[in-house]
Amino acid sequence: DAGVTQSPTHLIKTRGQQVTLRCSPKSGHDTVSWYQQALGQGPQFIFQYYEEEERQRGNFPDRFSGHQFPNYSSELNVNALLLGDSALYLCASSLSNEQFFGPGTRLTVL
Amino acid sequence: QKEVEQNSGPLSVPEGAIASLNCTYSDRVSQSFFWYRQYSGKSPELIMSIYSNGDKEDGRFTAQLNKASQYVSLLIRDSQPSDSATYLCAVNGANDYKLSFGAGTTVTVRA
Image 1 (cartoon, each protein chain N blue to C red):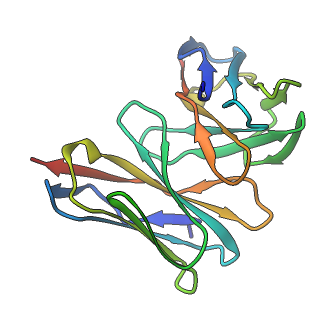
Image 2: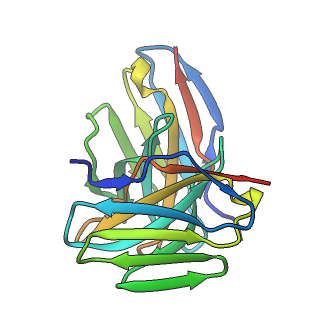
């Protein structure tokens, strides 16, 4: 039973560029949430997708956008990258209250 | 005031001892509570969930919830070096899909 998968593992971008991160949920899960985790901090909620719609959004600017596909996989897009966007980006999938995280994508913005 | 606060670490305990981790939350209507373990350089792993007042035991882990005091804790009995990690407390409110996390407490179990 495959768990949550994310790609790529690592990514290096320069300021002003755009990035797309991908997530495939755990088998049987229909909900995907995205979190940003800065070094030494807990994950911060970006948004959650359910039935291909953004169901809830955290305090992140519109530069952060997402999408969920009919197979429940999801993408996170970040435009106009800033140095402060450097972080571990985590995808979590769920069917009920419990959320299970993928391995994350480490984004470095230079 | 932060939504979820955890006791600041790091916490160092000898092998075989009990590690006690504390977490308080500000939203009184919070309904679901979780503990995640995060090894250095890895992603968080769900180890315990608790929804009602009282204790919940799973192997060497015991979660305790007191909604009146807005307090949730995690006890790790017979601590092992493999328990050395950062432990994150997460809270989910009523009609709220997001998890709110504390900053984490780093535990080091010394042999």
